[in-house]
Image (tube, rainbow, N blue to C red; front, side, top):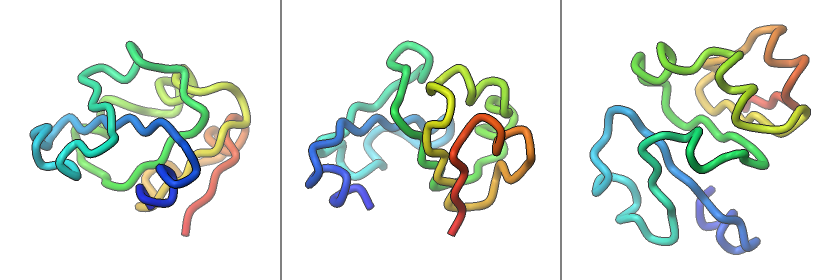
Length: 94
């Protein structure tokens, strides 16, 4: 997924409250952020992991603050499948 985004010229930001910075793709082409609110707003959010720490920190209201309305929310783990998200995001879950 990351390679596809980079190939299309996307700027990719990573936030993970659990993993150490050096565990993520070697940082190749990715901006690692310690606070996602400092780097946004974002054109889309892709959730690839579902740490309890992430879910405790980001509910629907916090996610709304990171993106404009109707931005894609790609939820690879089904972490935020609720009607409140569908009103704000273009929600997609594989």
